[in-house]
Image 1 (tube, rainbow, N blue to C red):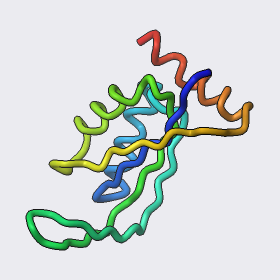
Image 2 (image 1 turned 135 degrees about the horizontal axis):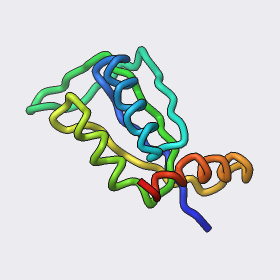
Image 3 (image 1 turned 180 degrees about the vertical axis):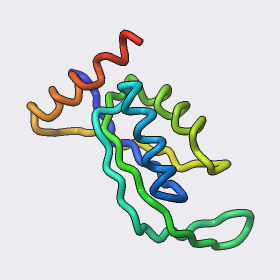
Length: 110
């Protein structure tokens, strides 16, 4: 059975998030993405607790594309150390997973 992932990244702005999403969609590395604006993030950076307003990007893809997707995100991202994490999709609506497969299938031919 094919393995699927939900991949998250956070961006400094909606424009950056949309730029990344458009880039990886055109490459067929993801089937779809959701951009959640208005996220307030708190994190350690350079020895201090910091906060920032960000957009969270939720992308759906096939596991076999994670490495390439990660590289594409890094190449377009403004952060020195961008968040790029993935969760396995253990279960899902069969028709939705089939759709994800079909929409990313063209990445194999590029």
